Image (cartoon, rainbow, N blue to C red):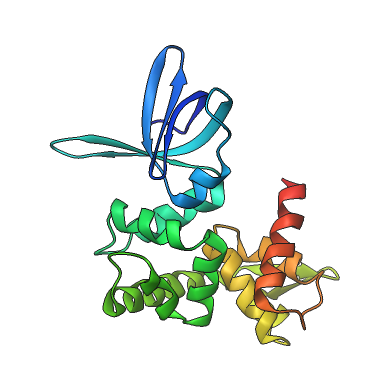
Length: 204
């Protein structure tokens, strides 16, 4: 299974990119968000990948960062959400916006993507919300005492939603709570998620 491809970007379209690696051109289906982050033709590009093998085709999907890759895997793990719908959602919304929509229950935000109706959007929010809720039980160490993550963020609904959004993006409840706990919880949820992501990226 391919984890990533790195090489010369030799072709780029809004929904497709070709990266040449060792003389082989890999055709990858991409989101609009990834397309906007790619360099110019002839420059080196690196994309994280997911391979989908069907009876009649082998498809390769490419993503500019691990957050988008993680969101794609979570979305396509839901019944009724195939690769095309996953790409459509992540072309319309960034992984952060998808996570915020799930954390806040805003299913209407997902209906902006082509191929996503209200019923499917509600199912996505419900199923991902359940996964996030299950992950919120991990303990967080504060002052040498392990506390449930839900207790740490209970003082602020904004902080709680930010932690849930970060969990949707693939971070553990421990990592998310620790990062959000260092920020001013009166800030909007989107700002908390953005600043926490910067903090977590520096640590990585």
